[in-house]
Image (cartoon, rainbow, N blue to C red; front, side, top):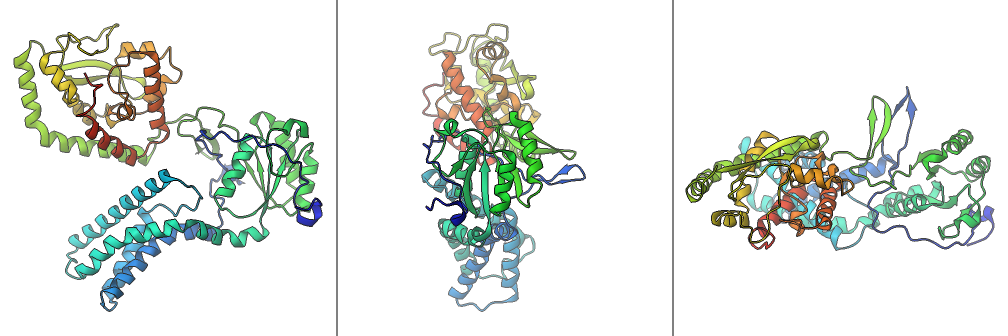
Length: 504
């Protein structure tokens, strides 16, 4: 690379050692393009309009194109009905399908997620189309050979297009890369991670390097990209003007607010778009997002994943599944209740206080499996060969049948099918003092099964370390919640419930 600044427009290079960004850090730099108008902040995408439109329309167009190929392959001439089907399929697919992900992620985990997502979304589209066809009595209009081949071939076509995402992304960004230049102010971990993600996202543009207020000797372990230290706010603004920089990313600590204010004042004399990337990712984030409160921007550091429509869909799923199970299993529930009543003295249902949503006390129901019904300040956990467990109770606990009455808690709205398992109040009061972040798990309804339980942490937590691991899985569930994850947990629960040796 030439050393002269004028020849390439790059910053003078100081070859410095790169400290690898933390590989396990899951939080990404949130880019907020703030445009102040009437004291309101608008949140939007950094992508050009043609990129956003292409990502939204490519997969629906593949669906329609695949329909056309199936029609031609079956030798049927195009008709008005087929044109209408293509239009309806495009509109439905555009609403259900996720935009084409052009980020250059690699690995089997991403492949597995893409296959699952494509199959799930296409199944939803097929379900809607079949519902419409049956409702309007249109099933006789279309050839079954065409429709069946279309339904089966489309997922393969969608996965093929996804495999070509890198060439598509480079093509989308090619025009922008010619004229778009950007720099990152702040040669720190946030800046390094931001540069990596910008390159990975194929957002286009020519990265000219890092600039920093600190001296070069303080950047010795930071990066190998072009970097210039000892910069003042005026120097930075002059560089932006002289090199026609179109985007400036401020990756500076929030504590440097006076310096940021000075820099923004100098950059007002340029035409560059300015993005502030706050270093909030030093914290342990739970569902981090930016929100707008009556025109005022705010960052959510610790929040529930079930805000808005997410909470609605999860609640709808819980009520529907609970109703189906209750209707289909009520004879078995009555049989278990009768067996408990006849086998040992005491009530059929065991009721115990637990912590529910937002840490409020709830009363949960279980089939009684012990000779005692403890709910005091000291509740010993069940252990292997526990003398309190009845013979019938041992079988119920082994097969998790003692948990079935909690379906009533789900219908009451106090529990969910999937979520952090509720602990006795006495245990909560003990562990909240010993494990940092323990109470965050109560930002969602407790579940009959959970992410920790399907990862080998079911049953007794005999040590603090085991409980700490369970809490970590619970927090991981909150950070990564999706309805698809709930379905995955339910499926894994059904598979392990018979073979799990931790249930006693």
